Image (cartoon, rainbow over all chains, first blue to last red; front, side, top):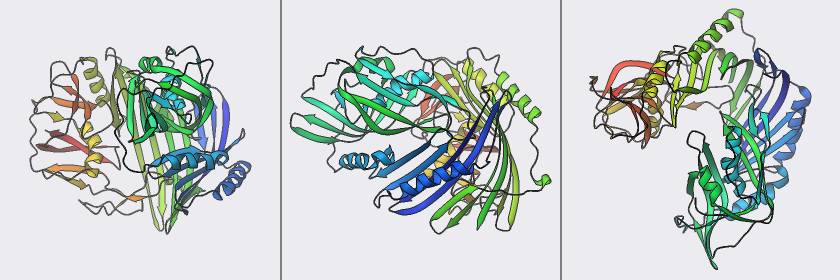
Length: 283
Length: 280
């Protein structure tokens, strides 16, 4: 165990319909040495003040028609502000900086009725940076598990920096993703007449024993020429190799996806996510 | 009313020792739940010291216990020993707990066990069964048994699901709930409060639930589901079945429950559940 000290303060509030339901303050430190980790809830006033100030500012952004969790976490390195927004069965993870734009995107994805089942075998176009979620599961988690990289197309660069991270001062730090940032250079992109546009992803998983990736798509649309039909939530599953092979094209610059809370070993961490529009076959 | 807790935990997490000492308070005012760290003085006698030497020895023994299960490895092993003092208004109580979570892996199979004692016996037994397991799925036996650890894992889902006329789910009397009241026998209405941490808003829930059936005789000759091979899903329960020959993986759909044995053991699933052998 690498010797070191870690101190953190976290202030979190849960709001629903404009009402404050829960408020949690947490603070503590962890001291790592050759005998392990010794953790207690000693308070660092400066860290508590920093996250209190951040949360005061975030509180002004509470929406009256959504369920929102505001989280300000202060360490010696930074104050990180995270907001989760749940609305009409959809949810996103964002920051004060991107809240308005991400909520607007989410509102556009709210089901309006008349959704059809996802057609099988139709190519998928991953919009809004949602392709980063596919790569999070198919490239990021395997990297955390020390798996060899899959055969991704040569025009797709996937940058997944790893760092020792922990959710709280009580947790053992693990080698985890900090960011998934994909970019394309000279990728082909030929939009099929009929395709499914993936707009929001609800979650996903990677199973290291079987090398299988599963993604739950929360919002998508079937596009046939000018005709656009909303698709009901659906699940995609495939082996990592099949998913890498299914990636057929990409276009544009990386787009920031409205955040990902990644859970592993019971520790939930935010992972920043960026990807260009991706074109894949249905894996 | 204010709830206070002071706790110490020793955790052995995949070989790394973690010691945590903390205290905090929680309060509820109308709809608002609030919690924060706060000093909570307790008398020395109220909060047991944790013997790190004994604990590490037990955790290491568990880690080493599966050495003769060929091809089986420990993917994850978390061993925990905790002590805590609680206060809610005028009520004050203390408790101690042991927990073990282990996932055993062989090939593409993963067996999951959650236990409330540091006894490695159950882990060794499942590891040895896993070592003998064939990869191919086989027909699910029309009649079979479920081991207590599998039944215990299933109970929280049964509580949440539709009632089954052939069995009765009962909250077992004993111990203290999250608001300092005695846990009483109950089959509905759930009069007690579950509070696993001072950071969690307490909620009414069935505590230490057990399953009762008019028939208690179990046919010991039937194949038995000895462990879960994945998360609990009543409609598709992944289990490891031992029929006395070559164990095999299967996905069960929980049918009619024919019998539940009376001998039971407590497991840390949901708000606590008693596992007893069950016959389908």
